[in-house]
Amino acid sequence: MSTSAAEHLPPAYPDRAPWGTAGRLRAWQAAALEDYMGRDPRDYLAVATPGAGKTTFALRIAAELLARRVVHQLTIVAPTEHLKRQWAEAADKVGITVDPAFSGRTARTSRDFTGVAVTYAGVAAHPMLHRARCENRRTLVILDEVHHAGDSLSWGEATREAFEPAARRLALTGTPFRSDINPIPFVTYAPDAQGVPRSVADHSYGYAEALKDGVVRPVLFMAYSGEMRWRTRAGDEVAARLGEPLTKDITAQAWRTALDPHGDWIPSVLQAADTRLTEVRRHVPDAGGLVISTDQESARAYAALLKRVCGESPTVVLSDEPKASKKIAEFSAGDSRWMVAVRMVSEGVDVPRLAVGVYATATQTPLFFAQAVGRFVRVRKRGETASIFLPTVPSLLSYAGEMEVSRDHVLGKPPGADDDPNAVEEALMEAAQREEPGDGEELVPFEALGSDASFDRVLYDGGEFGTQARTGSAEEADYLGIPGLLEPDQVATLLRRRQAEQQAARAAATADGDGDGDGSAAGGGHGERDPAVFEQISLLRRELNGLVGAWHHRTGKPHGVIHTELRKSCGGPPAALATAAEIQERIDTIRAWAVARSG
Image (tube, rainbow, N blue to C red; front, top):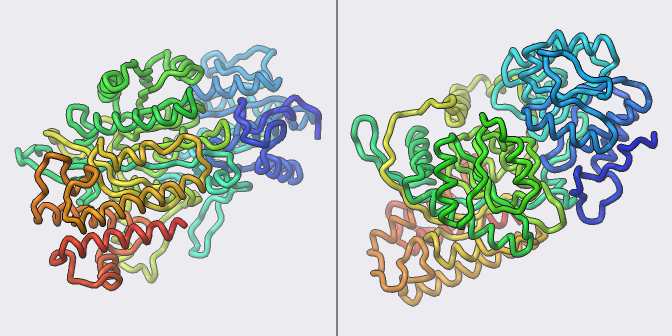
């Protein structure tokens, strides 16, 4: 190996070496580097979870190849303008000069630069320019978040045209799967056991492995449900509860109602998130929060709500602002509490101090969700935790529960058994559930009338914890007050203990005939009347249906099968005829299943 400057890179650039690893490459980086140098490949795909140190790994390879004169120049392709500058700054600190201002208009750069940084859109605009650069000098092309080359056929074709002559191509991604079937250039596909082409990574390092190594933070997903009310275009008033089994359109409208800044759901969730951030900052003083918004109007409204909550004006980042990158950099280097952004901070943007997030966007593709979560998992010191607040929407709960599952990019539709029409229909329904409209397009015109929020549950490590409770209640506070510095196993232990304590308290209150409890969703606070029996049963049925829906997304079992299994386990009649005690027993049972599965 050479003695290049890159040998002195910390495991995760910049200055984010985890406990006990400073001064050397992380194990996955060293293993991937050894594999790369041993195989000497022209194309290489490294898949590593966000925060694991892909930039460090790529720059180390670049320095090695430049030092050995295997290549003479470097081209870095990134998804955004901000990431171009981020790459250039990282490269400069290890002695590799990169021009982030290079463009197809000028097609020139100073001889002081060893390489250039461009976007996929820039490559698509001038593919022959980049092809000529590769043909004139031996070039290493680093394709950061390479799945973006499959965003459209034109981007993919341009990327392939531009860099086909390159001497070396190093592809990086933290999210190898895509929501479409456009092939990703320079990625190898091989048929799986069913004959379906899947992407093949040369080296993979997933979230589960990184969590065990202390390289990323454990993530707690704080799910909130609540009653939503809206008026349709036809003038009908509709009410629904987030988390209950609903049609696609009703779920979408309830979700959008929850995100309406004029209702009570989003202000309550922002208040809870700020409370959580305050707790985290007791242990991590500069911890910051990020609200991911759907559009600019909502972003400004959320910022105004946050200012009223915490007394501090958040940083608002809008994608079309010329100073957006500067704002992100200033927030990253500072210690202010909140940033509100419209989508653009969803991928690659490096703000290591982000520890609390609010998923306040109606975007529901698994790719975007994974990218958004990736902004919070970057660890700076051992024991840091991340918390993400989100609506109780089945698709989001499913993604949260699958955090540790690796996915490959799949081309084409998996064949069903003998082309089973039921299997085909289920696949189409699954695709329809995950569709989303284009920017500015609405599913169905409607008018939000109002909303309220209730704490639903915490999802962590594949398990579910907590019982439904009002916002501001002691039960909610038990989870918002979890310390900001905990090892992953300590997080799970604490969640199990708090859930057990709450269940015991509820059981005692039920035995004593006391409906007050700690302000849970099923009971009133002090000074309020006890809910009528029909109200108790209605609330318990809603909670049970929400848990059955979540269990369906984790196991793939139909709702009816899950209800049947609960009846076999607990006894009693169908849910529609069950008593409050019988429904509560089924709630406790399905929660126990979730805890056992996570343990």
